Image (spheres, rainbow, N blue to C red):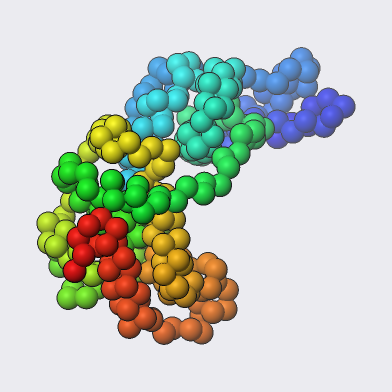
Amino acid sequence: MVVLGEKRQRITLGRYPEKSLKDARNEARVVLGTGKVPQSPLGAISEAPSYVQDFLRYCSQKNRPRTVKDYERHLRLHLPNPPTRSNLVERFLELSDRPGEYRHAFLVLRTFFNWCVSVGHLERSPLEGLRLTVTPQPRSRVLTAAEIKSVFSHDDRPFTDVVQLMILTGQRRGEITSIKPDWVAEEFVHLPGTVTKNKHPHSFPRGPMARSILARAPFRYQGWSKAKARMDKATGVTGYTLHDLRRTFVSHHAALGAPLHITEKMVNHTSGSFGGIVSVYNQYQYLDEMRAAILQYETHIAKVVGLER
């Protein structure tokens, strides 16, 4: 490491043993003599796209398949060629009106470049010192009863099987698409920690409406954005994401009088009512309470969509 100039800028020249002490001393003399910060060999990334594939293979060993797929998408869409600092900044500016995409792209690219540094492909990350400047606003969209009816009635299987189960169970899209038939029991679906976001095993109740859809598991699908666009056009319900269906689930349960801690248990939230010391000492699973809440909720949804039982 070299400390340069009046502002005492710290410059990392490399990592041992990739760079020998002799080479580091020689480079330090050049830097101190010229007063210029050495440029990272960014061109190596554009010349060797296998870096991206190596990174994805590395991620596949410790991340879920969906996470690796998201990494691949962001790198394919947002990694400029060449990936210079100025090109990266320009790309982020183009995403400034899409806060969610901006944030995810920034974090994925930063992770990728840090990995390149850690394995010796780069000496420094071109994102070094850059910070997120656009913060996504918390979402608050909740579908009304009329909107739920329109969305639930749309038929575009297997896409709408997943949508209907998100409405009926409040689970995440990735968790629903991971369901295997032997995880489905008489009254509950049991998810292993390998497919849940918080990596905790999770059991959630299923009512009669969900049971008939779960009989068609597993759900294999690609082309989510196109299917969502088709559904928006057909139903006239817009301005929401599939993840907003979880908030809709929780909000409609609250309107029906379901206790918050029961709803949090159903959607596998480990913060809030189950955060801190409560998660350690309270091992009660609330299975009967969740079962009662989901039956009340399904009765409500059946009336909303015109399938009263």
